[in-house]
Image (cartoon, rainbow, N blue to C red; front, side):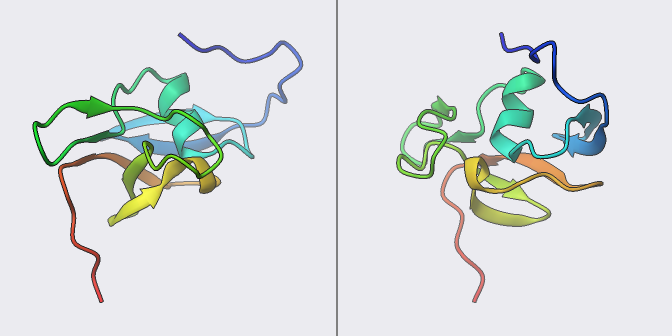
Length: 98
């Protein structure tokens, strides 16, 4: 669905998306990494378990909520990937840990 532009730097970081190690360019967001690797929905709704995916890519719509490094409810479009980051689809409503 998505592909890299021809002038994208060749340098890559390894991240884990839903248990699978993939490589992405530095500077990518977690949401962009999931879109690039066709990971599907970034979350499911708590009402009917319907899959949702990133929409605005600028932190307004909250459709890109996902679990990042074990922390739920992260807006994936605002989180820049780092080496070894673990990104998972968020299923339903997740309570924020105090």
